Amino acid sequence: MRSIVRNIVIVAQTLVIPFLDTGLAQFPIPGSVKGKLDAVTGKMKDVELTQAEEVSLGQEISARVCARYGVVQDPEIHKYVSLVGNVLTRQTPQTGIAWHFIVLDTDGVNAFAAPGGFVHLTRGALALMKSEAELAGALSHELAHVTKKHTVRAIQKNKLVQMGVNDTDVKSNQELFKRLTDEGTRVVMSGFGRAEELEADGEGIATSEKAGYSPSSLKTFLAAIKLRNGNSNARQGFFSSHPELEERLQKIDARIELEKWTASVRLEDRFSSNVKYNSVALAEIGTVEAKTEASSGSQPEKKEEPKAKSRFSFGKLKNAVGGGSQTTQSAAVTGSGDSRGVDVERAAKGGRNPNQVPITLTESDITVFISEGKLRA
Image 1 (spheres, rainbow, N blue to C red):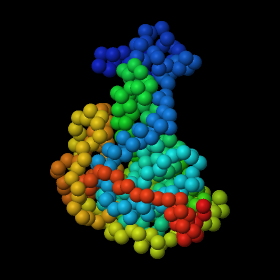
Image 2: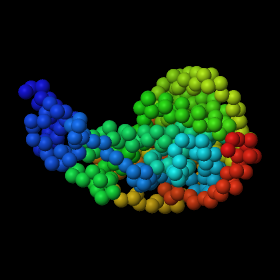
Image 3: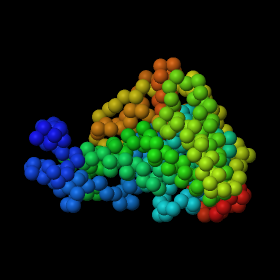
Image 4: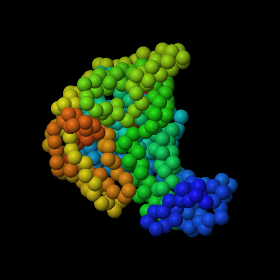
């Protein structure tokens, strides 16, 4: 009896059995849990999402990311990043996704990928890059998080998301959808595990190479991040949530050698003519104190139009949305928190306008872009 009791958790005076097996079948199971058990294994079923539901989920998560960091209000930079992104999506295994490429208005160096095709890159990340091939490497990495459904799988692992919810139909259950959004935002903003990041590296460089970009350019960008963090008292942003960079760099080299890849397009000149941002050192980045406000699941309020400012960044918020709350920027803006051990890239101050920037891309635009860059269609 003692070993069985250890498997039972009491939450708010409700009996909950997170991982049920046939050995506990003699205990009465609450109706809200019983309907979610697999008839064969007796374990909790995973929440299943259709592609349309993944898009809706990704859209909600993207809105929260944009509210946190703001969006650069420059159609030209969005068009350029979207052109590179569309060259790459032609080489991905998953079709039918309407991809969205969004430049976040922060000096922090980071990137975020939400389900359904929402890819975010900060102007700080763009400022650290030296070539279009490095941009392609970073975008391809984020594309892999989407095509491999890393966020969805992470949500499915968290069975507590389903607890106390009678109806697991995402379409009809707003409470469940909000829980999925909260958990998905937490996953996207805090980063993935080692296995997911290494998988994204491998898939990403393969996608870049298929498009004609030098696959070693992701390594170049990661090396720049490592150098940027060399004197930091705390591991920062994109660096802090990913596997040790030395391991990643070695695996990229090994994969390129194994595959005998020869693509070498870098396009430094085209990149520099489109990206004009200057990188801001960690010690000079302003940060915000994160605070959590109760949320009913509605969209974040629109913020005031920003004053004219410089472009691009890549930061991750450590205390992301979770447990039915929404994280927003506090009014308290401080100097660099690196001396206090703060993750400056994630806590970096963002812009005030969360609105996406509409652009128009035609098939002809993409074809010409590929041809001029001597890339592969």
